[in-house]
Image 1 (spheres, helix red, strand yellow):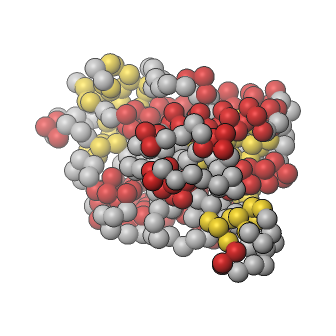
Image 2 (cartoon, helix red, strand yellow):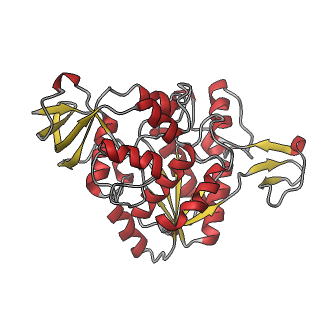
Length: 350
């Protein structure tokens, strides 16, 4: 028997198979889904912040697949198989509140989750073939990143999660991290994202400019991370940290409103939850304040070392950059490097 899977399903199955989501190795079952969402732990008691689930996309197979081995088919190709241990109907409303803190359909992660098929299946996937993407040269497995870290002699490595092109605030955070750690893993997420976010081609194009021209080559590892975005805010910050630990990172950067969207989470709520759970992930968090441009200071600063009032402050964020590109506005140098701004257009927004 076989089931059709989406690209997101395929990426998640591959990540489970290769240890990117360790200690999780299976698509979660009903009890584990609840345990993770309510208690941040797997059935065996290990810490885990975000459930990785597999929807049954062909509901006609219901009642036929429990206990069976199913071939996984993506775009008419056999890419692996899964041993099905359970087929179940999750309580999506309850899970949404626990995972996202809301069941408001205006939250893109909630909307995505609630629109998934009615039934989920659990089991351990085996993948024969890695997903094929453009920019393959930038994809590195956890073992490859660890090997590169060792080759370069980097004892400490900061993980930097992003879903955007690099603006000046990102640069500030990355350079601050390099003052603390020997190196940095810049690890853009290029799976599913909400409409209006940047596509992967633009992200790669922008980072090539930044890394090749402005950063010391030995200190920066650049790799793409194929996984859907959940927009689960503080909870997802913990998940992003756990994933980067599996890639060999000793530190992880948590900035302003990490993995947040709109005003669903408090500005530094991710800092609070990271402090609470740091020991369970065994990684050091770099809890950095949100950078902005201060007209009076004449540079990119944070509220830890700038005293000036709001009328002197210019916000730097992915939202501002995306809106400027959408509206065709020229961006100032303090917001985005002109070398990067010159290679971006409306077509780069998904």
